[in-house]
Length: 102
Ligand SMILES: [Zn+2]
Image (cartoon, rainbow, N blue to C red; front, side, top):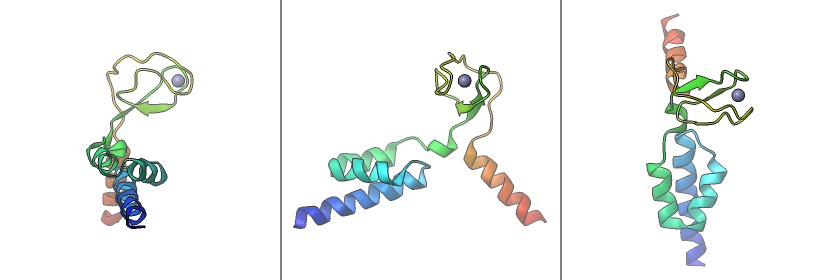
């Protein structure tokens, strides 16, 4: 019984950390619940998904992460781009700042 409670709280903590970083709550909940201590650490040290720079695929126009080597939609091999698109987080911050200015 005690073990289930511990696993649940590790899952919950991992899920919250994953969600804050722009990942899936459910996915990180499962990871942290399956491997309690390591899963939570992985969530904490994982990349900030919504802070990654992005770029547009030249093949299909889909916006993908800057570090992706292949487009996940059309499979085009992507070279490192000259121009990057601002990360989702920085776009949100700019929109929030514009909202306050009005
Ligand atoms: Zn593509």
